[in-house]
Image 1: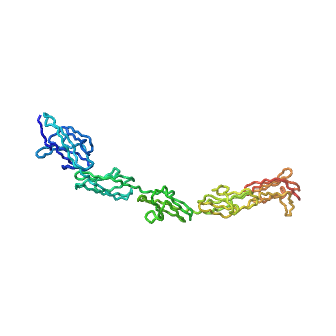
Image 2: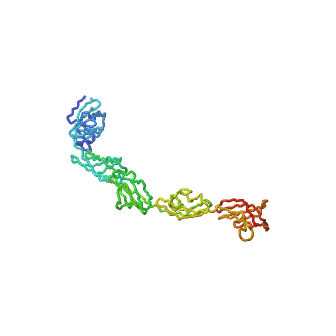
Image 3: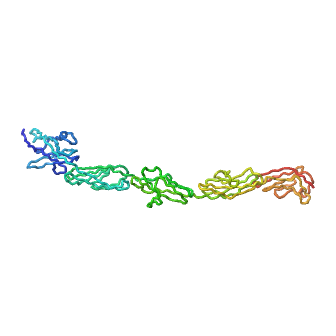
Length: 468
């Protein structure tokens, strides 16, 4: 089996980040180490466990690896092999990665192993930072400006932003508008032309715009009284400002409440500032003046012997009514109820006069009617027990005497039950004759039915003496 001798350069160090041979890398920058061999190898073992400060530390053995390139150096062909995974060093300094290769020239020669190493110089990673211009409010646009430098003077030519909400950008300077409040970790990665990577990340706080909700956004009050508005669940550290206008203008007050007296309808507007962020629009507060109510018009609806019924019109915006029979000294609920439109006074005597006042009750005032009065009817139905139809003009007719009757029915009978007279006229009576003949003196019977003005019926029966 022929032997092949290699000098110390048989395994050459070809660390390559960006395509150009280099002898260095940057701290915390992932890279794939590369070696060159003058033969095609059967196995290539990267002894990461024996390297100091490297990540990861597990050895990698590649069987029949495929070279990534073939180059000629000093009239010698070399096969270029690259580890099929990335490694990195956290700290600066000089390091080596041991490498072992197994090969043979052809199928008739024995396998041979040669050892070497990849020498790596680790320099500082690029220094990267960024500044931002941002109100901190969800409706604002944040402007980010990336800056950076390298320890070896290599330019930074690639920039990668991650804004913490699954959105990215790849320019050195970028803008971002967030759609939701929260704390977002904004990371910037800068990559130099030699492949070295530097990064930085910072938290960016995005504040929600404050909202304003009133306990009541509309108040109806009486003229000359106070309307008091209050913020519902006010936010801690928020500033609430009250205005006369929906936009612009100067605040007339600040605070979580606002109170003022009014004699006319009025609009107010309140906005909030929290964490430097202003509410999108001002919340409207409405003051309306309740109308004053008017007095009801009172009238007598009906009069009876023992009662009088009064009625009145309904009054707009009235909450109810009260009545008084003593000129307004005391007031009570109408007989028809608080919201009723009538009142009946019962238990009166005949010819008794009563007076009534009614007042409407509103939220802001009460209004009193004019006085209405009425006199009860008489319940007296009088029939004389004697009459003298002698033509002297005195007590010549038997007549029913009553006040305010709608109807009077009178019938007269003799002692044998014969009907001598009947009349349905209030003003007429019996003149003591029957069919034109004067009836003799004596006792006669009568019955009468009286319908009073209030509809009540009075029935009377008796006897009367006819004297000639």
